[in-house]
Image 1 (cartoon, one colour):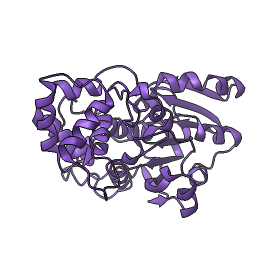
Image 2 (cartoon, rainbow, N blue to C red):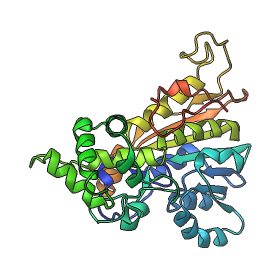
Image 3 (cartoon, one colour):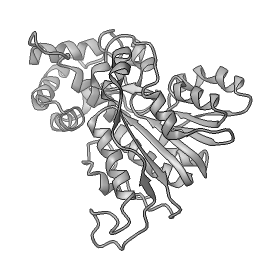
Length: 338
């Protein structure tokens, strides 16, 4: 996830002009002021960063996509020293700035990534079956061509909420024995042929599989969980955490994190033996969604949801991943505490 300002499963298609989602609501929650230091953990096309800079604040902007960093260099120069670009996963944000006034995270694939066929995020334009935001590591083709059918079914079922996960996984196993999947349209067409598509279907039959592969290849849920813990460590007392998500899996993680960190009575409900601890955050707004006017102007905003919290003076807690209820998926190490 997490490398830019993005959208949900329905945005796997063609070019859409980049428009920052929930920009007004994000700025209201961030309350940027001159002299503030704010981390934009998902720089993308720089929509939030530009608005924060315009308010007089200094920004440390992070993105693991080298293309996003390269595209932002001119803005960095124009900022007069108030913008520092960092190519890194946003899960490491506390390694690049500490005691900051705010952290903003906009979770999802960016329009720039979707629009480049060579990145392999979209199947409307044919391209290599890649999907790697950092342009390194395991690709979607590696997963499709080498993982066991049972593992593929788990990935498609949990991360894509695909009801035909098992059928699609078995089809992939049979097809790849003849020829490995290398292109986005190869996989999309194979899924459509196998599952079929009714005229009333609003989305392509491959949409949820592509979402699942993208989330898995980039470990988006794990990165988000680690980024929330990193933000807890990086924010100073009174610092603001603002997160925009685009589907229920992401929103559930953010909601659970804020609820757990705002609970001062008993600590994590998943660890009843733990002693009571002080709240490290207090809720500052939950479930803010886009207006009808914004959705009309920018369809990508329709599933966006903003949650915010304010850091207390309590010390950061250890990173207990059990609060998120994430399953152990194949090929990804179960994260430990930090």
